[in-house]
Every structure is written in C-alpha cells, then in structure tokens.
Image (cartoon, rainbow, N blue to C red; front, side, top):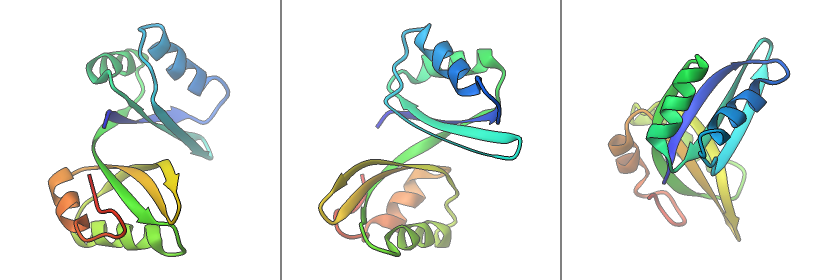
Amino acid sequence: MEGQFVVQLENRPGELAAVARALASRGINITHISCAGAGGVACCFLTTDQVDEAREALCGLGHAFIEGATVVVEVEDRPGGLADVAERLAAAGVNVLATLIIGRHAGSVKMAFAVDDREKAQAALREVEPAGVA
C-alpha cells in the first residue's frame, strides 16, 4: 500500500485545495483521500505512492502532519464489524491514526488503517474474518 499521511488543516475554504495543488504541482498523484472537520480544525487522510515527494510537499505547506504504517483489513460488512476491528487494535495497544474505506465486496469492506505500530496491528488482526489482514 502507498504512504499514508494525516494532515492537520484549518477548517476554512481553500485548505484542501492548497494541499491538492501543492501535490499536483509536483506531479504527485493522490490515490485515496478522506477529509473531515469540526469547529476550527480539519484534517485530510491521503495516500500516495510517492511518499518522499509527498512528505517534502507537505513540509513546504507548513501544516502539521503524521505518517502512519499501513494495515489493510477486510472488515465484515455488518453492524459491529468495524467495532470488532477497532477493539482488537485497542486491546493490542495500537493507536489508529486514520482509516479509509478503499473497497467494498459482497459481505465485506476493505479498509486501510494508518496505525502507529504495523506489526502489533497485524498480529492483533490475524484472525479477523472474512479475509484477514494485509
């Protein structure tokens, strides 16, 4: 999976546009993105296969950001499916920095998690149904 970044933004018009333009001007393709905001703070969770270039572009913007190790999980598509995965990660002491749905199949949702400890996350999720962890 690509590099994952969680970028802190001000919750105001133009912030997402500035991030997207900064990456585009360097020829960096955003492969997945999700954004949210509340009050004066927003963040975007994005992935790209050009990790070093994206890091440099984001540093140039002056926004705080973090990078997460990627864990991709097939989560059962039912009430409580995500809760089961999140509880396993929490019980293992893994902090979820961000999550993003990257696909959907009959009965399951493919999700990417940016986590602070990929090895611990993988160990905690080995038994997750229906398709495990990558």
